[in-house]
Amino acid sequence: MSSSVIDFVATEARFGAHNYEPIGVVLSRGEGVWVWDTEGNRYLDCLSAYSAVSQGHCHPKILAAMVEQAHRLTLTSRAFHNDQLAPFYEEIAALTGSHKVLPMNSGAEAVESAIKSVRKWGYEVKGVPDGQAEIIVCANNFHGRTLGIVGFSTDPDTRTHFGPFAPGFKIIPFGDAAALAEAITPYTVAFLVEPIQGEAGVILPPAGYFTEVRELCTTNNLMLVLDEIQTGLGRTGKLLAEQHEGIEADVTLLGKALSGGFYPVSAVLSNNDVLGTLRPGQHGSTFGGNPLACAVARAALRVLTEEGMIENAARQGARFLEGLKDIRANTIREVRGRGLMLAVELHPEAGRARRYCEALQGMGILAKDTHEQTIRIAPPLVITSDQVDWALERLATALTQDFS
Ligand SMILES: *Cc1c(COP(=O)(O)O)cnc(C)c1O
Image 1 (cartoon, helix red, strand yellow):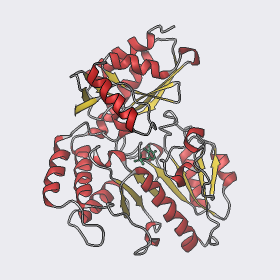
Image 2 (cartoon, rainbow, N blue to C red):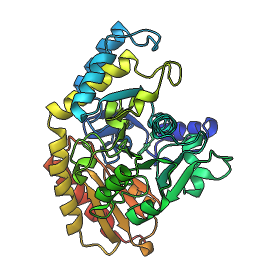
Image 3 (cartoon, rainbow, N blue to C red):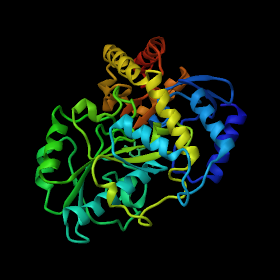
Image 4 (tube, rainbow, N blue to C red):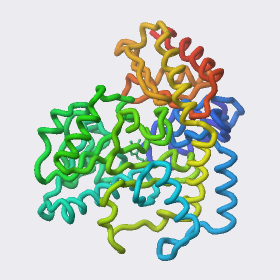
């Protein structure tokens, strides 16, 4: 590392809370699938800011929409109407087939808002006695970092010494419909789940799981809340990951790529009366639904469909997965994923995934380890076949490298 890179890293370490352990690269520019560090080295971004820059870095049309809107009007608060919110509602509802929209900022806020809304629905529509609502969630979930959310995490790092936590959550194994059937009581208002567990290491449920889940939720009159903050908006090769399962959630949560990485924008979408229970003054956000966010989100959604990014994610994801499966390296335990949400799980004897990510950095690829043994691969959805092949060559080299 050069002295300037060391300065950036050291200054971060000196002043910043150490709640991250970044790979030692300081980025200063991005375009499409590529990012550049302060020394001009180019990397293929295989994390895409956890799928927030699915549309590619600094997409020119989203940038133009953002700049244009920033010149006109950025924030009104919801105390007044603005001319971007209505078209945003219309466009996202038409695209996703939802009836109601609640705009927020971060993904965690969308999750919190959904929890509040399904509880309210439970009391006011389902008739659960006040204070008794139960929400079922899955082990190894990741739904964000607020106090409410980390309280039902099963990851010790996420939870330890942050309590006491809010009651009302029941944890069951992911991918186990029988466990869901068993956990449901008359007081259950919702099942909150990720279609594919991203942070847990790209864990796909068994085939047919979500069909059973959908049936159980319908039969027992509880809301199926799908956290599509990472899986949604084309990442898995469909607009929503639920489409792979042939089901529809009652409540869908979007974030991350909803702004193409320009701005924090999230949304709760519902196709029934869940959001209808919220009355004036009962929930809100100063920045939620602001005109700048809406203009950015509208452009981010437009380029996703207009430029065929969802189809490209399906096509390139299949190519990438096949290519990973063809790598013959005894470091690899399993390769899995859907669309451009991919993971390589290493054998325990192969050593920590972090080492491989650092080796990949030296070859011009930025990828992220998760849970010690897994390398996550999630490039922007605009990646080309040539770029996939380029990445596969380097991955093959890195994964067959002998570190011992
Ligand atoms: C990233 C993520 C969140 C949290 O989003 P933030 O914007 O970081 O608050 C929630 N759920 C899932 C599935 C995510 O991947």
